[in-house]
Image 1 (tube, rainbow, N blue to C red):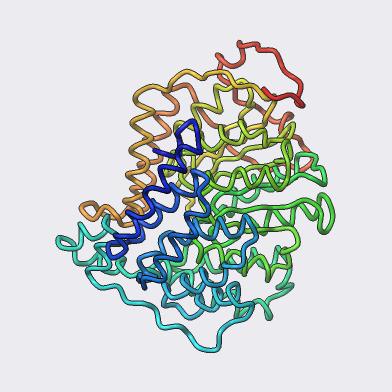
Image 2: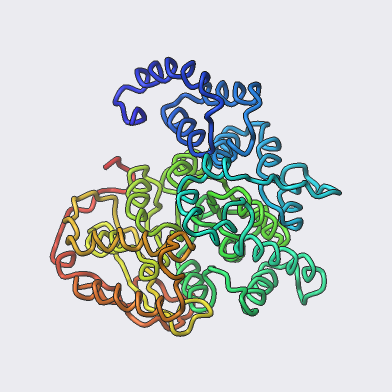
Length: 480
């Protein structure tokens, strides 16, 4: 809460008084506590206090596993100020995964080469799980089968990513045209098509829509694209290839943000193999924390395309932050994925009613799930206007909470409920679409169109309230 004090120097003074008290409690440190404390200090402008605390914890021999939860924030800070501590932080992360292929990828970005020997992954006992993953520990006594998630870097998710790295590394020198962006995309798609290897990437019809919209706008050399949720770098490679085709080699930037440091290293590895490192960048951190960095590095009115592919319940908050930071270029595009499954109801409500945005809602199949219909929102930024939007109905607000619940259930973090099978996903998507339609929002079926057809020439979905509202259009250069 101190990060929201109107006078930041007062907050910093209070935080300075807290440092000695926190240092006295080093024995009780955990990943959750470390992240909360360091984020509060960092967000309040106390970068020097963050470094002071970290050095103290290391001098007190605090277990690195009790600090690793703050690695994303620390890497965000180091990358932003071009610090030299990145290697040490990545080495700390390296010991959290037991998969040799994934360790090799992290080693590549920590040291510049793959270490000859695998690092023995740290084993978490019950006490360490209780300190660092309290949301999981409370279930273990009643659901022993959840112990497979207690060890970081374990479980089906990380085994699958390890298999993906091995698949790509084995075929990158053998497959036809392997070291091109499209060759790399095809390698990842082939892996996802295998039995029990499905990946949550924007492939198939979603990839076609993204390419069509991305290439349908006129790009300037100073503009950049911003993706939140890099995962393994699949869409990062696609955007980098599209920018190269639009602007030529080395012009423009495709920035992707990934909160998980290990997944960020995998994404960088695949981007490197695809030959896109001069255009594509993968930043570590939470989207809300790196938004000011994007404006600082590229300037205002330089964001040509934003792709939101992470936690749908906060899309609308981060979109508003981008608007307030004056990030979007004239005619900038925002695309939101998974608007139906798991869902982004509050975002959908805002962009279909906000006068600054011209929004098209498309219905299309989920990648490799022909029975699941998802929606994607494509919105064009028309003018820097900031009117208040009516509050969404209570049913939509309740739905927003419920979509978070379903995300956790899909991740196996609702042990009292079964994992979501395909029929569950189909039924839940149908339920969400029914609420959207009751609120006056529907989608058009997506059909591939040529890249030279602009967004404006396609059918637009606008609510009657927006169409009837006329507000003055200010000049793009002013602060509004």
